[in-house]
Length: 479
Ligand SMILES: Nc1ncnc2c1ncn2[C@@H]1O[C@H](COP(=O)(O)OP(=O)(O)OP(=O)(O)O)[C@@H](O)[C@H]1O
Ligand SMILES: [Mg+2]
Image 1 (cartoon, rainbow, N blue to C red):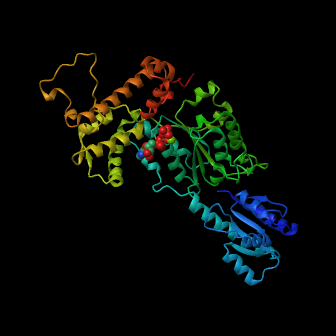
Image 2 (cartoon, rainbow, N blue to C red):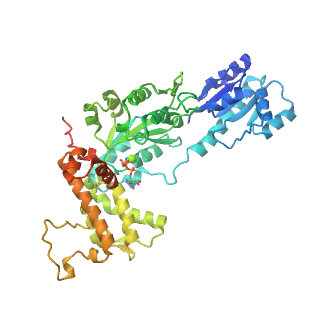
Image 3 (spheres, rainbow, N blue to C red):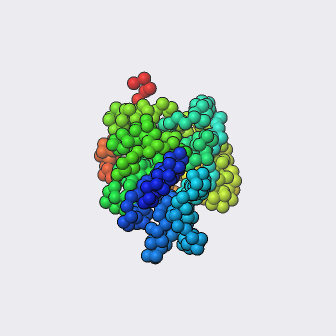
């Protein structure tokens, strides 16, 4: 992460000396001039280290200000003065200051002290802001029996060690984010942060400051400066998820970062350099979005130098048994379920199913099956009806069974209400997916034909993990 140092020192000579020392370090420096309200102004800047005149600190403490160094929102405060009796130094440290430095220290001593303060703060920030996920995904998670996946991983392995930007495409739930995390974890940047931003989840104005940060007063409500994700990702990787949802004017700003490796905060005057690897992901057809002028062509070309298209699960069916097995183990530990296995018929049904929601859907199906399962082995009856291979009867002519074997055994193993709800949900999902196929993903048209209003169609699509983009006809590569 890029550290930010605030320099609130009135004396020109001292300020210049410190600036000179900091010039050769990997930090951004903000200078605050004038003595009026300097403490309050320094805090609203939102830095990591505050080098400030000692009398301003004393003044603040006298006014009852509390300096709590355990808070991330509070910078490490270093009081600078050419008058520092030992008792005063002790008092300042007791009040929460990181340290005190004499303004006339020899160059080398001053440099070493400043560097040590920066290093300490960096460790503190890394430990508190950028908590690493418990289990880091690994590229070995993607080792596969499937030739399609093996060919894909060959390409992945060729780009792991570089800092090239990556565009990761693929249907929902195929593992784009997991792959990005795994690539980062095995790249030379592994020690640096991995910062993920979902470009589709935030309104435009918030997304801008989330990505690029803002200065205090940049807009109404910006009472404190805030660093953006690019700054947080300094030295590591930024993962821009759902890049296709990024508004056009932010795409321009992003292109600039990709070209210059410089960012400028909202309301900021100076751009500053950041060292980040950019990975972007989308489950949409970005090339089509370019044609439709929803995505900038120049940004698309810049991002798509290396494009990794994660194959959908139905094109690597060989992986299904192993994935199912590993998630049985995973859920066992997580939910403490005594289920250890899955029988051959159930595995066969999983392999036959088309998995529109890919690995994410498989994980959910396994978890649900483990919860329903009455023995220690998942059977066909524990799987959702749509996956068991059941096709709802056509037309009205349902004959009354005289023999229970005429209906799927899974039906009778479950209470009516539960079976009905699950079948209706399966039916709705299959029906809506088929209708969306016919209308090429057009919401209004689908809603009209299904006789429901677009809002409730939208809600149902969300519930069933159906995205309209997945139903648009795919362009062939040569188009
Ligand atoms: N090869 C794999 N091994 C184990 N788990 C996987 C694998 N691929 C994906 N997963 C799991 O599947 C789930 C979905 O993966 P992820 O969130 O990376 O998908 P995504 O492609 O980013 O989906 P979306 O487009 O919906 O954001 C996650 O829980 C992830 O850990
Ligand atoms: Mg994702």
